[in-house]
Image 1: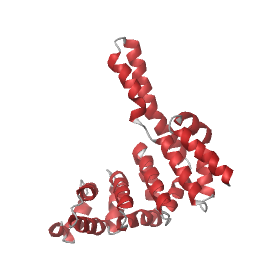
Image 2 (image 1 turned 45 degrees about the horizontal axis):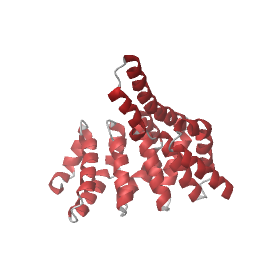
Image 3 (image 1 turned 135 degrees about the horizontal axis):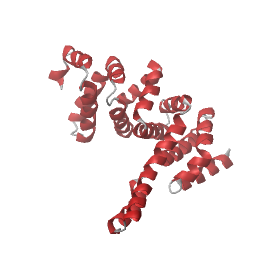
Length: 242
């Protein structure tokens, strides 16, 4: 068991710089281990952090390419630099598609979000947010298909008293609720407006503007171009409270 942890720790270190190599060789293997072994929470955390490195587009890693573009006057070289920049982003999306090819892998992340271990929950929320960022419509469909059980694991995050968890959860909901009327409807039906307003009321007394702003962004997503949610919001007298 210790040898396996050390091996994955090494992969995590390598994945920061060698996303393509680590992802190509180990993405499916890591996803399967994560799905099959959720008892070892430290191992789960390491795998989630490694997977996050693999699918996260790192703009800083392309600074060298950008500098070349600034000083480049030869057309062919300029095109090559643009292709390099595009390739880095494309790799992140391709590895995201590989991970979610098996929907159970996404369900595993939802299960890990429901764990009580702080580090595992944080890592799972951030990984799911990265998946959503890279391939929003498909991830929205998978989460919607997970039904009430899947949504309950996410919505309970809005009641978490830990600001790190709460802030990460709001970042996730900003993407999850974007331009998807079905998900917007589920969140509203599952008392989403009340949960968000409770956060705003609680944080207003402490002048915690960042979290309040995030809540308002999610509220805007839920209401924008959604007549049913707008009627619900007005009908429950949320406007005076806001």
